[in-house]
Figure 1 (cartoon, rainbow over the protein chains, first blue to last red):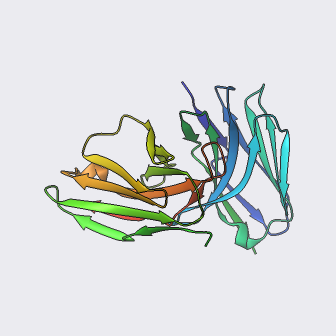
Figure 2 (cartoon, chains in turn brown, cyan):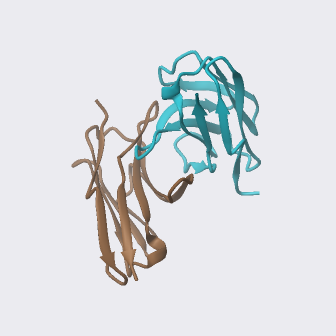
Length: 110
Length: 112
């Protein structure tokens, strides 16, 4: 079964800290992995997409890595800001299925 | 135009009603998706259209009927829904399948 998990479920940090969010998936036969953020009651915003052949992607203060063989991805957020507060979801594209993890709820305190 | 729009934003319907959700994009994307999201849960894939053809149907009950009349428009027709179908319905599009998905703001559906 294709399952995606994320830890931690929730995280609260002071402004300025660097932080790491983790995503694990059971089936390594992936096309790509995407990271999204979702603000309460809103749609999803794409942050980064890593193809199965890539090891990492960077966008501004965000860096995502992918280790397909171990079924893991991490999202690194540098110098966190209150505006980063949201739920962060990873999603794995298996071609005929697109599976989201349960998300990490992040609060960055001013 | 770099956004996905969804109408209506909110919808309340009875179990005997027929209604439709609409999703539109003008980014030239050829893959379009419907997701269902219950409160405090991640989105669950319902349907995928690729080049206006239904590519993926995730064992969704027949009371949900998707339609892709052209490359810019995706509809979800609703009939005889149950209260447990109340959720946020999200539409997304991508240039093609396996590319970055761009999501609309969703339609919040309440079935009474």
